[in-house]
Length: 114
Length: 149
Image 1 (cartoon, rainbow over the protein chains, first blue to last red):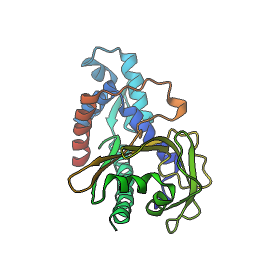
Image 2 (cartoon, each protein chain N blue to C red; image 1 turned 60 degrees about the vertical axis):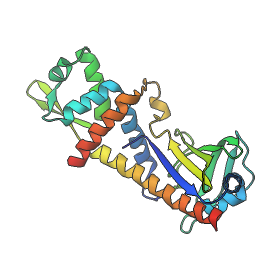
Image 3 (spheres, chains in turn green, blue; image 1 turned 135 degrees about the vertical axis):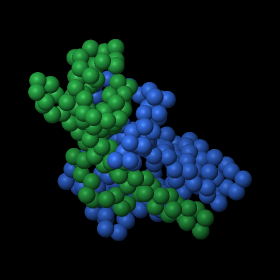
């Protein structure tokens, strides 16, 4: 196996956190909204939904913990912005696992056809 | 981007031959690159030493799930579990499935690895919902965004 040695348990845990953060409709729609443009306040993000400010805040914290959004203070409010890096990392990780399977299955092919 | 990996490969060998290569632990070890210590048994752990150059110090472990001759072979494991100093046992494993179908020229093999979305044990309490269509569409949106940025 040539599983790459630089991928640590910590990184995999982060990946799992990113996947978990993405596995929720509300959070996905928050990401979509933040993807679209400017950093937004909780009030603004709550505006388009039927959820309470508290519920939206809870979802934003999950996204923040996974590193998908970052918040910054702006006066009395926090503004939330999308950070694409964890998703890039995730994509890279899956591509690496995927390339691994290509190699392994290539060996299986030679093995059964040879 | 997706939360599972799927590979389809056309093999010019009959399903019986492909099945043996996958389900016989010695044959499996030959192409997978691991020296396994015993036959695969559903519900039990399979273990061995990786033989792939550069990774000979690594133990390979998987729990065999289903063995359905010439149809399905599956196991759970920890992908990238290559650091001997790390205990991976508390992490949620992924599920690997080998599905065989007879094709005009031999065997169509579909391999899927899923479960990358599973939450580490400590966080499992949090409701984890997956909305099929919504998920796919949203991931497309996000992927488009990520590709542009």
